[in-house]
Length: 355
Ligand code: TTP
Ligand code: MG
Ligand code: MG
Image (cartoon, rainbow, N blue to C red; front, side, top):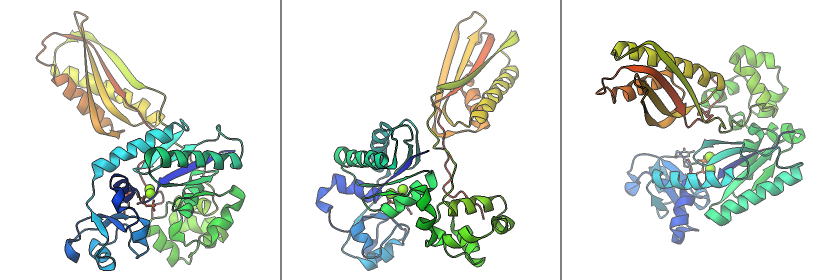
């Protein structure tokens, strides 16, 4: 049996602000664009639960938030700071299981199947993590506990704020059935509207339908929607890789200093690296080129990208750039190598069902 946790920080950006400005705690706090006395453009990024009592929420125009609570504390967005705090959270949570998957700035899945033997133990484990985040980092969070990612995520939503919620697989259908379809994790706005127009208003309506009918309207996503509505989700927690790097090397038939030959070879090697990357479903952040000259001296050059990617052109272009940086060197080249490292498994998309 699998046991999965989803940990999501409560009112994250606003909680970060409360941590560094304890004097604003207990008051309604809104992080977002400048309301400029009610005439400001832009939206609310998030707000604490005191502000939510007034009907304020993420993505609402900041001018509306101002109308609802003009004397709330309005703060600008400080991404750098929240990212730093996010890293603190992630590195603490990772110590509880090496099988983890970060899914946004403030949430991550943990597979704790081999850490606990029952749901009772899982609840204790979840409490330990939650308490540690609270005590060490002074931040509130909520935790969903269940047998798969989908249910853990939805259990966490139900636990908010500052709670822990367990949904056992046998309770899943009852837990989900009265929720509106828009609440089903992975259902975006377009799918929600289409489901409603077909007469599905609650998740329970989908549970009772014939999956063939969903397939007719949503093609391959139909079965996924049906499974989700029934609390079924087989997807794995995509853990960070133990594999350190992927690399390939090639020797020239005849040593060369010719630009076109070298670029051609770098492309070939990059393609081989890419094949393995794709096969293993990894993303990389660093590209390294190794050059061995005909006198057997070696030259290594690396470059790190801003974001993880799994794109072939990025490997080729970076490899060629790295080689170009050493082209003053006119010695003939005997062997070339390309390596990608800082590997991870990352799935960025939030909405999993297309229209
Ligand atoms: P969420 O986890 O969705 O929301 P939250 O942490 O503010 O509140 P809670 O989980 O308790 O319901 O988003 C995490 C952060 O992402 C949030 O603090 C701010 C940012 N964010 C936006 O900037 N705009 C948005 O529309 C949303 C939903 C979030
Ligand atoms: Mg959150
Ligand atoms: Mg979140």
